[in-house]
Amino acid sequence: MRIGGLTMTRRAGREVNWRGHASALSVALASASLLVASVATAQPATTPKSDTTTSASHAKPLAGSLTGSARADYDAAKVLFADGDMKSAIVKFQSAYDSSKDARLLWNIAACEKNQRHYAKVLAYIERYKREAGPQLSASELRDADETIAAITPFTGKLAITVNEAGATVFVDDERVGVTPMSEAVRADIGQRRVRVTKEGFREASTTENVAGSGDVVVKIALAKEVHEGRLAVNAGAKATVSVDGTVVGTGPWEGALRSGGHAVRITEPGMRPDSREVLVQDNQTRLVSVTLEPNPASVPPDTAGLGASSWAILIGGSVIIVGSIVVGAVILGKSDAAGQKAPVAGTISPGTVQLPLRW
Image (cartoon, rainbow, N blue to C red; front, top):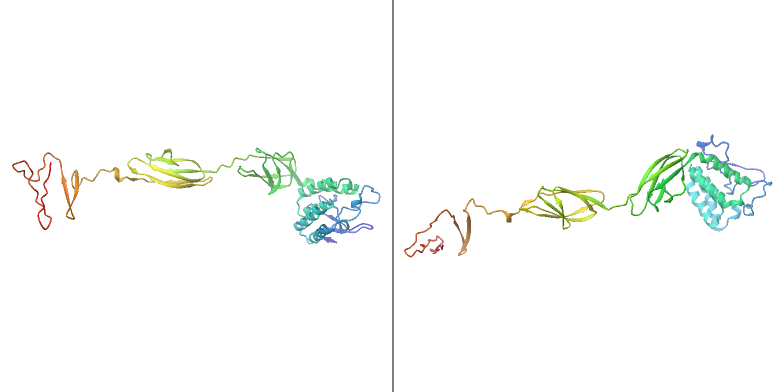
């Protein structure tokens, strides 16, 4: 009978046992005993009567030894396993293990990982199962575990990861595998594996490596400090002076690195109206500012095309009279009297005549 891809068999005088084979590896693993355990009882194959190393804790199957929430989680995990929902079954088996600390549940988690072809995880759980169960395991149980490890290992490889910064967190395929420095290589499934490293204050770094299963794959990753800065490029005239936050940084055109955030930029040039603006610089980006300065009216001489060298506007009686003078030798606008005084100038403002003598 097959449940969840596993062949169920019954032997006289023993609990129901299952033997799983990964379909893609069936030929290569035909001689290996893969994850021999009981999903009905969730324990390794029962020790033959001739074996005397089995402890009393394994005298009962899990179904008989688990109680309370651990038993409920275990029963739910069996249903999920039979339905082929391996991810959910792992969650329930793990919960049962957290409550009971029964190492046999680690074997069942390994079975779920095997059915998802997560071979590196299978090895990790089987090795942990051996460590935690320890002397409780019979000779046949140890043999099953060792045969499984031998059959699965060729389908994994190791990543020897080194990082230039200590205290960095390392991920393989987005799963956390350790913190640098890492004293041991990380076992991973064969194929393309993505290694990612993070540390506060540094830029995240990642690389993709091909794990072929033969020898360690050396992975060297260098982290760079995270600097919050961008660049500002000011396109202005060659005579323009560029100031940033009140400090002269150069003449136009100018480009330089600045910390991220807002900056006060001022562009000046003799005889031109200055330009001041607030500029936002963003991380790892270049902000371009183009400025065309306009002439400053205060620095331009008055127009002399119409009224001569100088002119005045005189307000008289609510009206304006424009009076101009041109200095080219002596200019006479009226006749002098005998006493040397200038003759009055006759006005034309109605209703009468306004006397407006000129003074020299």
